[in-house]
Length: 424
Image (cartoon, rainbow, N blue to C red; front, side, top):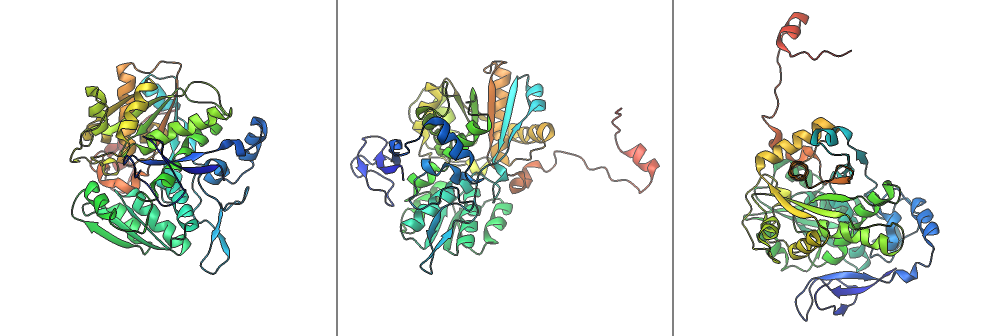
């Protein structure tokens, strides 16, 4: 595989491709390094091979840290099975719609807006991308139990992947998580553990175990799955880059890895042009990165989350400093919005695009609206709005935002009791 080793993001110390996530020299985070010279194809041939690949993230297998995959195989990579043979990876993620949102653009006074709707993944969030990569690597490393610390969407994905592959799974969540996300996790038969505390408390507890925690000891591999969002956006735009991306920030990994995906395609000549302006989005009730950006700081001060956007409620974001650097060097920003603006963002996206998003998408849409109102976006820019999860996961956020008209079953009652919209 093109992945050659793990490398510390700070001191550049190299490590083997094992279940490691922190540097022993400086305690910096580890990430996957690649040797793309092994690909050995010109741009046109590489584009053709990608386009001829499976309709999921494994069409980009050359850019992901797995060793056992079959090129062009519709079910994804081949991995060892419990019986001693091999099996295709279940729940193929990715190849989600990129929707041109002209009505949203018009409402906001913008020229060209696209919505990358990652709610169309198997468990209805982008987490299926990162979990698919992490679980594949876990099985290659010989793990039989997968686990995670989660604010909800990751819990759904890990439980579902465990069920699809016949692996034991443990999911640790804050005890006050939204009911819809709890139900959509427990149904897969996982061992579900509610922890009295917030996500950061859950994460500290999980760091003491030695299973395949997809977002802890497998984090370097897990994070690579987010690059596939960038790969798809570039391919779906005809091998072109957008001018700007608006992306939610929780830990900061998704935000930075989308940019890294664009950079990798640029380095290989698959796309040309400048890296997009990267705009991060947070909720006011958990905005350590946005606060640091506004204050001109290079590090994020931890906060105690208090927001309806629970999937973004990470008070001590691991990749916060890298998100700050990315926003600044691309001419972007990191903004935060109130819970009321989050609800309005959900409604705005639904009414103008037909896409119903969870609260994280409300944060992102409200941030796009703020950027537009502030005049940060030029009229001729091509903007991509990244929607990471399905609205059915956070139904409480839209309660009371619309009216149901109850009438008697007669035409007269309908005409007198329901507002009419005339059309020709």
